[in-house]
Figure 1 (cartoon, rainbow, N blue to C red):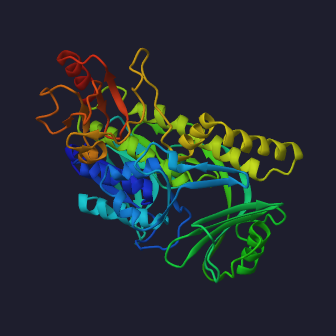
Figure 2: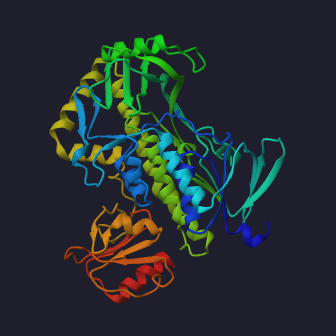
Figure 3: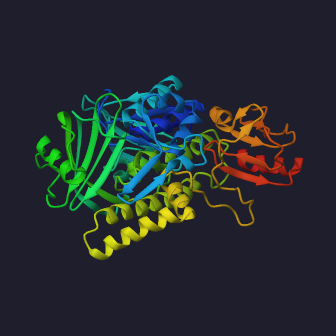
Length: 481
């Protein structure tokens, strides 16, 4: 591979949702992308993730995929965390005020199709066995199915290869943390009796269980029994799944015909850095946490949405100074917050100490009574409440998520489908970025006078209430270079 090609190439390791979205974004932006995956290529109907939150649906909407994904699952507007604590998702300020219950493989199917159509090269049964980097690029040693090791060179490498990330290990990053649940069970089953809702959750005594409908006659069961915490490789049968479900929910709904049974433990871990030189980490390679709140896959997809446009700008030689560093600056605190919130929910759910049980009751009552607290909880769990750091003195919108506002030509997230910045202004703009196809200029459907420069990931890069041509030109030049 010659030097010019190397500087325009990115290798993404891991073909889960995070890697697929990232690779698809890069290829759509014109970057040459190879996606390396250790597993063979096959469509799996088994997955741990089952819920897609509002912010993730917004990101998928910006890629033209959300409406199709909606047809694969069922939305729920209420999320019950404990018996007495529930969150009303219908109040979310989003086009998607719900949690979509759909299996991870449906998300992967759409993202893989998009990546293939954009020209991503897929290298299956290819395992990373070595990595070296210098000022110009990264050499990645990859062993194929035939056992032969081939060195691939790229401008950048992204490890999206899960909690046992070979990329993270190759760059020498630790993965500190603790186990929060020592023994979890998962099963996909059929039920003789249909539960009342799409999602059924409860805990009782030492047991907890959740049942989610996949909409095709199969149900995902997750649970734990604190009185029977065993190693991941201990045998698991349907009788144990039934027992846990009966303990927690009062019935096993006549479950039968398990197509998949698995036992695992749940850790809280986060890499100290998301970037080391020309190598980045995203998704489970960067952070893992408890399944409480269903935030795992969603957080990884939002990592990818944050990183992809920045990498594309760097590969194409138009990244402002510090842009690549902003990925860690923005996403590492979000990962840490998710660890804390999901871990806190699990600890309260598993509370055995009377004081902790009392605390859970107080938290439940307080959240139910205090709308600001509920809004904050909803914002964290669904992802719509996170904002990124803004420079001192910046407009209050800078760094915040921009909702799917109405424009004269349609909706903002439709305008974002080109992978470009979008300038929303009450006036006119014909400066840099438009002719090159890197900036879309839109106008409010209302009489609003704010001017906002929206990043490709849907966050405000800059805003002002007093727009003038010189100020807009300067802001566009600063962010689009």
